[in-house]
Length: 416
Image (cartoon, rainbow, N blue to C red; front, side, top):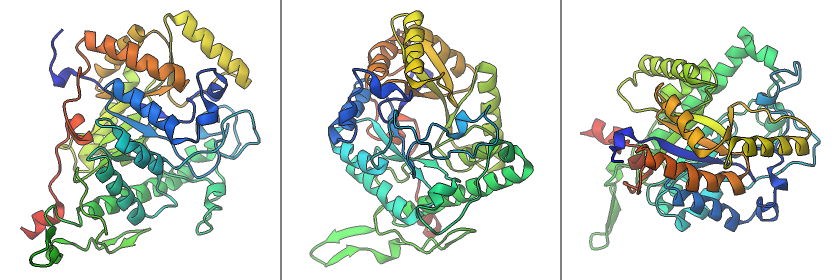
């Protein structure tokens, strides 16, 4: 079946530990003893690349994983969001996502690498050069996923800021929404600083002329002079402009305040619709926020997030989830819709959501060792048969895979 790239869906996978189900590490295919080795992550990315996926995201955080993140507190009331727990029967501990991506980059050729970055306690200058370096190491396949942290125990790791505990009831109040807005406004400023630093070197700032002794044209390095509520950054960066000009910026959102960050600063927004009507409403809200932010003409992809249990039939997938739930001591809750079924059934759902305006999907494999290969060997061929997915990589950069142009340098345009 022939098709045009315009009809193709975009696909990413989210890599987290041994998988998104907390009991995934107990599966025979999980390889928990290798979780903190480079080879483990290299194998995951190689599998995703075999499936011609657009990119992988790599989860990260500033505290040990907890069984009590926000998504699991919808019905528990008064428990502070994201507090640590004392469980020892789930994966605890992570490697640094940016460093994983840098290690994997030379071992891959086409797939995008998008580590998670916590903006609340890190400095935008450091992250700008880390992601610029990743873009050089990967020859134009880098991105970052922006995430905030409002947890008091995470602030305690740094000792520079303090945050009072907050539960879901408080978060939904006007005061809680104001507090949330402050965090996301800070994240928007953070990304703006990072983007300006990426542009602070013009593309031809490096001369490298040994005969004349001129390595760099100082007139093509620019101060960014950013002044905001939380940051005052002069610039320029110490790293030349990345190969993509602007590496990919993505962000996850569940409601209006994070949707606004997606609209203001992201190239890809990850959202969590429950059904087609929900997807349509979310896309409409993000597009309205885009227009309000003056970005109506910019391409901002909206990807739906789904946790996936893929098997030969729906009963087998449901039974596997039930078995894992029993091992974990309760039903698996998720901020995103959980899908159990076959690749053909998942393809039907993706097409249904795409008809409502989603341009791609970030799949969260419940068990990476099982469900990631099912994505690449079952789902991808099914989408290819329908003419909805590429049959070969058609671009050398992550922006190119997503149909995003390499942006002009804002300072070069101002100078001209």
